[in-house]
Length: 254
Image (tube, rainbow, N blue to C red):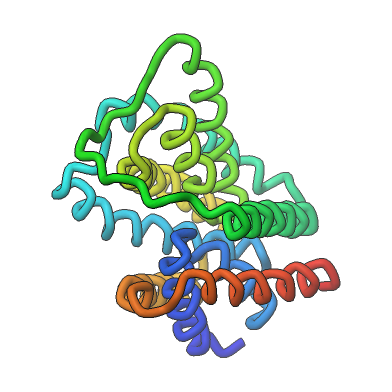
């Protein structure tokens, strides 16, 4: 395996994931598995380190513009970390075949959400400067449960928990979308770091895979921010749907 190819693959994953607001993990893991024949658990481990790095790079920006709800972030941090630790420990017992099918299920879920969003576009929302979420006793149970689930998904599949955290904070807790993304980015960094340490203890972090993957994701994320302003969102989503359908077929047949 020529690890030099991992860097350009990670650049593409980081750029494409950033333009879609999904993060690079959802593309990096299947790309490493299918194109470079990296075992899926090692690909997930590399993706977790990349997710942690991009989170650390992005959080200062969100903090500077006050798009992190610290009060909510601290409350959700413990259940999210507990879920990430549980997911990291489960990796030692779950076969790679099961993780592959879990990843296929995740891709299909994202594709469903994206197709629905394309058919039901939302009107532009006014920007809110109040980065606060609602928090009451009735919502506490479901909020803690979904946060823990986000941590488990992050640890098992290496995609970050944003796929759960952002809808949770925005839809259920009523925070503005940008605030939800900023708070989720803060949580993702902590959970991905904890999960990556567990992968390290289990011997699944390989520097020859992790280093070019992390560098590529960081470069690609910066590139994606610039390209996102030029490429039409609809065209980008259509390309993503085609690529992910092909990826699901390849993963299912692998």
